[in-house]
Image 1: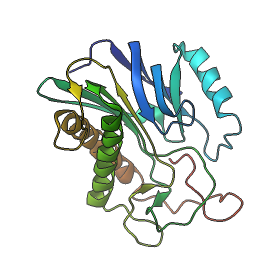
Image 2 (image 1 turned 120 degrees about the vertical axis):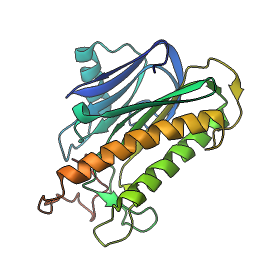
Image 3 (image 1 turned 90 degrees about the horizontal axis):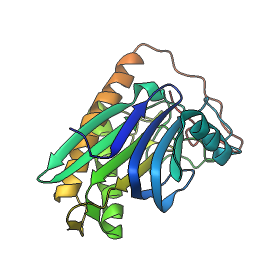
Image 4 (image 1 turned 30 degrees about the vertical axis):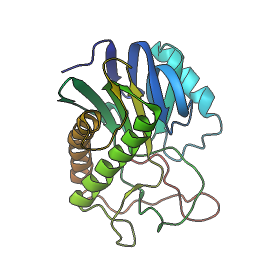
Length: 239
């Protein structure tokens, strides 16, 4: 199942989602975040402990190499973008496409884990819905996707270094984009058509990606972490 006019590319340099017509986007993207219109969404791979002094320049260079049309919004990650997981789901006439990259080397519990400086994100979720949600519904969809992420981590038994259940990693990012086709959606909660489709696709992608990461790192020794100045790391680009 696909969304007409939307294409996805996955490779070692980046995940790229492009649209024939500009999408309406709400995101926590490091480049172009907030409410925006975009022809493309990028999730660009960067080295671990990337300083991120020039995120815009890093993204622009990657976009040029990959031939990505402007305008765009972009995320950064240290997770292996070629291992991105893609899933789709539908509810009635609403379709959703989700692409996630997962690295769990910096799990955190919101409101409990220590503060730290910003570093590139580790669980990045890109969602495209073939629907016409209002601005408030886009915000609602971000909350719905966050509920799914936290529930998947809980079910998988992901914990912080101190043993607390992880609610995410310390620098996750999310993008919700809409084609603006079809009926207007006032809400984006988990039992709406648009919310259910997005949540179902996100759950499929996250369960697979989280399970694979845990299996691959089950016998790995604890990682030596380079903490940024000031204490505990926010997360960095996880692996």
